[in-house]
Image 1 (cartoon, one colour):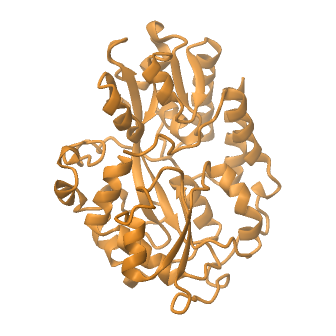
Image 2 (cartoon, one colour; image 1 turned 30 degrees about the vertical axis):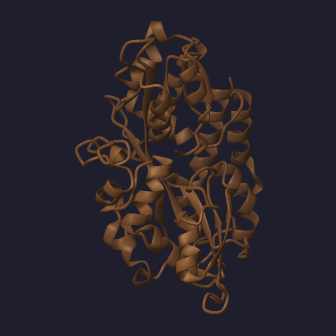
Image 3 (tube, rainbow, N blue to C red; image 1 turned 90 degrees about the vertical axis):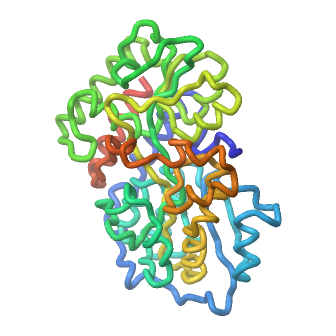
Length: 387
């Protein structure tokens, strides 16, 4: 079973606000002159002679690497490629700050793969900071990527990105302590939940639902609609309905009974349910948010072919099932559900790992933002959750 640290763990709304706001005012946030052309900002691929690969991913997001039977060790053994794997992606904005100066000036970040959430992957692709993949070298990606993750507006043909794992953002509640919470609006208004509700500190997660609450489309909204949604959130904060904005430390508070209901990520809830079956995940009436953390290849990678081999390997159904059995997020690989029969049959019908298309029919994404919107919206968000 995976750890409950897929997203950054932040201690208190003040820290959240500081981090959310800090990236919004970085000197390169306007990014004048930082845009690159990946077709001119590239390095010679040394994969044929240098059998190495450098990967940056989120913590607790791969099965135990030291085991000889782990997916990573099998990859190294099968292909003769040594993997330098780091779990140094703790927050999208924080990681952006770490690499922005190099990538913005066509310098190496000494990594071959970075794993970033949809909106940040979209941002880096839009800035020209990532290399296109050779489709012929990642056939499993194009053959096995599940349909709901195909055709994203920011990378419709998956030329620059490959989902590592996906998840749903919805509602979790403790059925032993409170009646079913059916909608995001209930989180904001029910008096029996007052002061014992948490929302997520990731702006797009929470604001996607807030836009739904005010009747807007998270995939296509105006500045006025954003303002209405932010005002509605501000009312709930000021009334004391919302206890805090958190990373996934909400898991511990929900299990301990400190909160009764919260905005939650599906993978965390699966892990909580192993210990406490009273913790329930709800597909809100407003729909669910479907997101992915994506493998992208930064400019000046020197092991592109090795990186493409890694991506193609993790899109083999048997490998994908083994990974999903450990971290419990949505598996992006078609055929992995059938392969799961041999790995852990108890997970085959788990709809939070293998949701069918009917369950995902109401899933929504978040509109890609311009750099100006990133700055303006980020400041407004920081002011509300820090206030």
